[in-house]
Amino acid sequence: MEKKRSRSQASSSFLESVTPSEREGRSGTQSSHRLLAYSDALISIIATVMVTQRAPLRHPHTGRGESVQLLLTTKIAVYLMTFLIVTVAWAAHIRLFQVIVRIDDCLALMNLACMMLITFLPYTFSLMATFPEKVLGILLFCACVMVIGLIQSVIVVYAFSRPFLLNEQIQISENQTFYKHHILKVIMRVPIMCLFASIFSFIFFQLSYVLLAIVIFLPYISQSLRWCRSKAIGQVEDTPDSMLFYTYHPNEPLSKERVEAFSDGVYAIVATLLILDICEDNVPDPATVRDRYGGSLTAALQSYGPEYLAYFGSFATVGLLWFVHHSLFLHVTKTTRFMGLLNTFSLAFIGGLPLAYQLTHEFPRNSRNELEAIQISCVIIFFAGIFQLAIWVVALFNERETLHPYVRYGGREHVFMLAKLALYPCVALGTFFLTCILSKFSAPIFHLMEITVPFAFLVLRLLVRVGLALLRLIFCPERPDPRTVLEEEDEETRTPFSALVT
Image 1: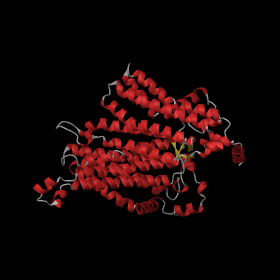
Image 2 (image 1 turned 90 degrees about the horizontal axis):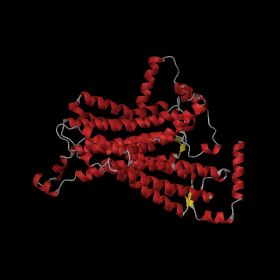
Image 3 (image 1 turned 45 degrees about the vertical axis):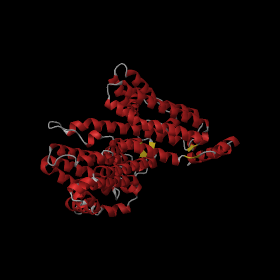
Image 4 (image 1 turned 135 degrees about the horizontal axis):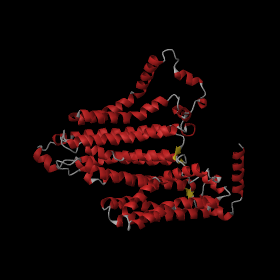
């Protein structure tokens, strides 16, 4: 209470000390909500549409002795790395605009310059993947990242020169200079690493790729090094301000609203890409309809039956994975950096679902390539779902801050949420092993999985209740219904999940 009073007093005294020139400058600013929404939409589009640049994926030129898995490995890896790099830039954008809450025309234009370079990153990475031994691709990528870092540094310096653009916590702080230096130091770490990578590209280009890969996991590497240092020489005291913004701690908060907006953008784009493939590849030529099918459009469309089945099954998969994601974040009260990383991994595999749709009907029936394509689709769906489940597991370790009481350990929706999150990983894994055993029926098994899962979601709550009732009847026949007990308990006094683990 005393801290809140001191903050409110500091805030009121700060507002009283605002000069007329600052009031005039503040009148030319606006909320950053629309700029952030535009930036999230732009980055989600550029991160996801990279999967459309997959001509070798859609029509693999596989010979008799070639495996589609071997041909697709490099292309999928390139897509995933590009997605992760773009989302790293997006995460940096989130952190920057958690400090800056208002914008003016100058900030909006500098943000547009950042967006232009971020959207150019996938092209430079494609050059690196196509010509891995050429220096130009690495130089272009590193140059873009360094310029992005410089622009963000200018944004920070400009914002701190006009404190009314910053969030209130920094405005009332007495350590604004420390904030500015700390944020600039964190921002410039990635451009400096890219500078070294560009230098090493002329000497030993393999090391350049290692440095660029480190960029993605730099926050977690830095946190691990800090932990090792604290164990070796003792805990290093940080000033209170250094723990508020731009830390490398996995529990550093991220804007939940922006994580949801970015995720919704990815799901919407993936769902749209599915129908684009239908429009492009499954509209018959008028001359073919007239000559081969006697002018009967219905007869001509019958040959595309497997494609339509694959489309509806894939759309249902994307939609239901979004439904699970929505249900999860509906009960998440705080999003952390580590949860954001797991969400990024899940979205990266979601972006691969248009590829899964294409592969399920690309090859001749009962061929080895068809079997491998279906198994790749199962793997993509499995990892898209398993990372959603991982987000919930991570949230349980700090459940009092990150989760609604209903889905905490022992909450009345806990088991139902677990079943909802585990359904797709379990079904995808089971389908994968079934196709290994019954390879001749791989396509019917996969399509049956896509069709039956929506119905499983409809009766999932009933199945969970029946399952819990059977377990209580078998193992605890004399124990009262735990739901009755939980309704009588204070939800805040339940044992945290982390305490049970430890």
